[in-house]
Amino acid sequence: MRSVVVGGGIAGCAIAAALRGTPLSRESVILEGGQPGARPDAGILLSPAGLRALGSIAPEFDWRGAGRVVDTVSLRSRAGRVFFERPFEACVAISQRDFTAMLREAARTAGFLGGWTMGGLELEPDGNIRAVRLADGGSLRGDAFFACDGARSRARETMFPQCALGPAVVEEIVTVVDAPEIASELSSSLRRYHDENGGLAIEIVATSSLRVAFTLQFDPSRWRLGSDAPAALCAFLGETVADWAPEVLSLIARIDFGRCQRHQAREISPPAALARGNLVLVGDAAHGALPFTGRGTNDALIDAALLGNLLATARSSEDVRESFARYSELREPQRRRTLQEDVALRSAFLEPIGPGGPRLPVVA
Ligand SMILES: Cc1cc2nc3c(=O)[nH]c(=O)nc-3n(C[C@H](O)[C@H](O)[C@H](O)COP(=O)(O)OP(=O)(O)OC[C@H]3O[C@@H](n4cnc5c(N)ncnc54)[C@H](O)[C@@H]3O)c2cc1C
Image 1 (cartoon, protein in one colour):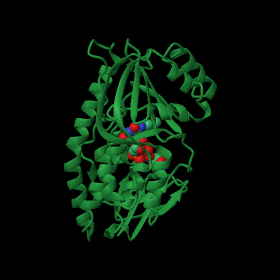
Image 2: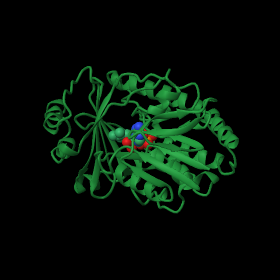
Image 3: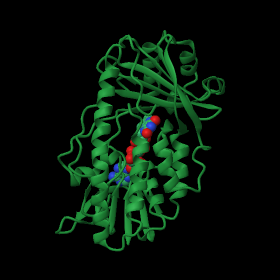
């Protein structure tokens, strides 16, 4: 059977890797609209659940060794005063770019069509998908379709038009900075610095002995960022966090603003199901990823591992549809819970910090 994976990000590569050895991997192809390396790098945290999923998707890789173990969280004020520090179950901080490259290597038996964009879906009279239409007018036929095309998924829009994208209530500026001394000082700790009035925080974590992932989260209704141009990002940070802790300012001084990414995560009203016929939604296409629970990548990996297991014995189109329906049944309630938790954490983030200190991000 032929499988078509739309989107070659983390979810797309993870699903192609998870399908190895199943009847669906005999002819599988990933369609990726973007160019490799086009996106600036960011840091991601692989949770214990994400690491377990990776053990099932591609056990031949040393996923823990590819990043840096993080096992302590330190929540601080903007001036650096510690609200509290505590250990948590070890996660791995890793560069998104390195991680995607490893997953792509794990998925190398699938064909990879880079620079090809899905223009739409061709439907059979019974509602199943016959083929993916390419932007150049051609088409790719398949038996099973995996929509891994991110939060703004075209496939989801076509199959579940009732799912609307909400506004970006919190925005982020993210990058990875060369800063060996700060990486050494951070060691295995994730630090978050908070403006006491709420709505503004900086998170830093080492992804290796040389590099530190930096994330600024802000409420765009209070701090307005017009353009994404490097000079505008530099001026914005300079004005917004001018009097923050010295170690934060020292890291900001090393940022290459040409390598920053502005991220406007939007909430998606949950689809009624995560599958319809022979099409399944995976990763951000299924749920979007608000930044507070740190679950976007980890959920995409759990999705892929589950689908790999469910499809291990699929021999027919009917088996594929049943496996997709079962996946939807198992994952959809979790999706709703994650969205609720994310929204609650986002509300807390926007409020002034209370006497108990800021709320912990869930991944911690
Ligand atoms: C800056 C940043 C920091 C993050 N930090 C964390 C973190 O710490 N922890 C965590 O768990 N998650 C984090 N996330 C979220 C995480 O990156 C995503 O949830 C995860 O990568 C899953 O993404 P995905 O593959 O589903 O979608 P995406 O990464 O959006 O990939 C979708 C892919 O589909 C391609 N595509 C889209 N449309 C088409 C089309 N029509 N045709 C062909 N190809 C198409 C795109 O080019 C893209 O490569 C972060 C995200 C960002 C942006």
